[in-house]
Length: 156
Image (tube, rainbow, N blue to C red; front, side, top):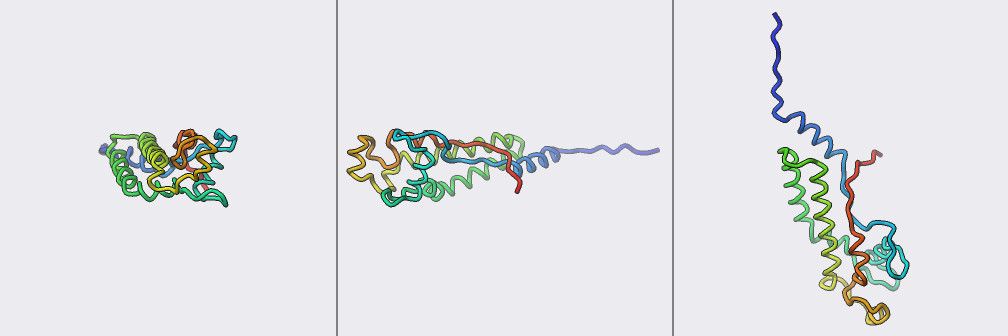
């Protein structure tokens, strides 16, 4: 007489699904394309000019500065979120949303506090714009376009 086999999963199936979901998803954080600043320039172009500099604009690398200053905290959070997913306390999409929100905040904080690390605005620029003396913060257009999105990874 055949014996019945009883499978005790203990969450293995969920763990395999979560690992596969982590491998197939990503979070992207940065400047949203589309919006324009007060002068009619696309914010994405304005961001690139400031990140890398131009002939007349000094480089104010807010993305690279964030990557450097937030690396340790980002790695720590990523580890904690991974553990929470593996333990079944957090879904993969929610973990990626948490990571995206954290890094969005880090970039915005870098921009808001750019006077502590970036080359200051030229006095002519301040007079012309009648805006903030803080580099990267004229009317907060750039800081308000920083966002994140959780997506399925594209193959290829």
